[in-house]
Length: 608
Image (cartoon, rainbow, N blue to C red; front, side, top):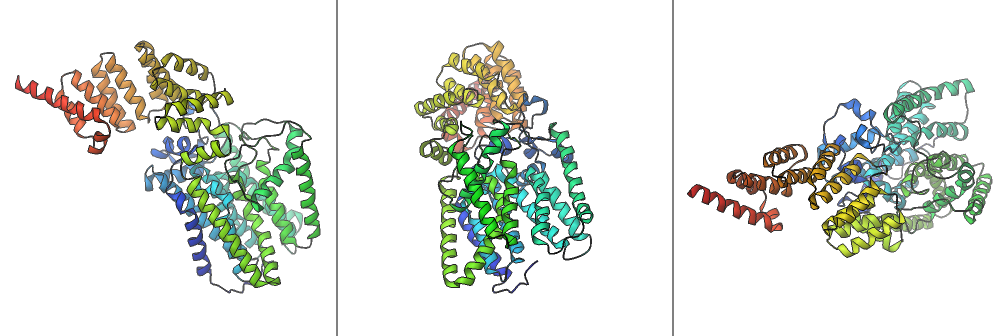
């Protein structure tokens, strides 16, 4: 039953407070960069950069855009709506990370405003739902979902699920088909954003048990769920067509282990909600022993939670809220196995925390009844604390890869990010530090191809081509995406190029171009390889084609100018080089020298 609203503040005022407070907390992150999965899922995703048939977005496996060229790699995830939003972002912002991050923040704000509206239907006045919506929106555990572009699926599934739940609740208050159809529509959109939305049917069932005063017969209730089941079956059919599987690839752990440790994962997630400290990119696996301290702690925590629910069993909103939270967590309890490399991630809490906000409203309402002054002061302090923590995480942790990887490796000792940190040191030309961290990464994860491929790139810069080939041959037997395999082929081709084996180098670089045609570096290398072989006409043809497909670059223009000069066409070489901006030319002095030499050759040619 929904409370009759007694408004002590207006919706507009409350909404403005939400918009200003949350925007201020997340502002440092908006100016950030693409990080980690953002590169393959966003920056290098051809479905974002090119106009494709609309239906093709619904036949794509999330994170795999190479089709038959993907090298047997599968993510097992089907989230087509996310790619459509990325495509729209690209049309608005171009491939600029701040624009994509701003969209994530905008979606987060919409979700918080919607939550504010939904919660206001269960509270007297708007102060309590405003406080609950602010605590959700400013909670630092949500920074992973909001500030990491490729975690947008968690915001979308939550936003659409909340809308579906809202219209489902209205069905019992107002007759007609409008609300059932809207609820069903948003349920479908939520499913296409992330598979978590399947839990909504169970949450609807819990709502009927704990929040509806009079339940109609089971046949009537079953008919109400039937359309949602039909949409869910359609989703699984579409998923099967796209990725050939109903479930994600399975990770480690036997069934007994997964069941015994599920309570521990629930308690761990509750800890992150109520005591959020040292938040970062968790890499948590199962303990070695079945009956470990974590197992005992988990079951003890579950018993305590059950005892508290029994103590407040008459508070039906609390029962519904907590059970809906646990239901929302079910997909990440690993009872049904997933391929995730951690059992805990902050971003997974975004969806279930919306429903826990109902319990928060109940708690705040009781506090306000006991002592309004104390409740306002305590809530204000908590909001300021969470908002400050979120601000700092956006500034110091989620802003860019250097901040993220350096804190993860140095502060938290996470070996999973040593390869990423090594790559950043390589980009800074700190070869000694890059070499050290690459060796640590390869020893810790010997079957990860990316670390070996990136290490080979470092070895090529160090003129150690034979050693680079050793690591590339180790990596080529491992499963990887088409883009990663393209990097392998390119690096292997360049290793042979450095060794003077053009007969092996050119086919490998050609394969790299075929696997990832939008990578301009591969076109540069293929043009250089043809030029080194003395086939300057083909070099020019390849470089021009690369410019049309992948875009221009300083390296591509330089190689193109060199090939023109080798053919004695100095005018064309000058024309190509003069299009390079003065800033880029200043950064690479060899371009200015090349342009000067082309002009001298052109003058001598004209003098003759």
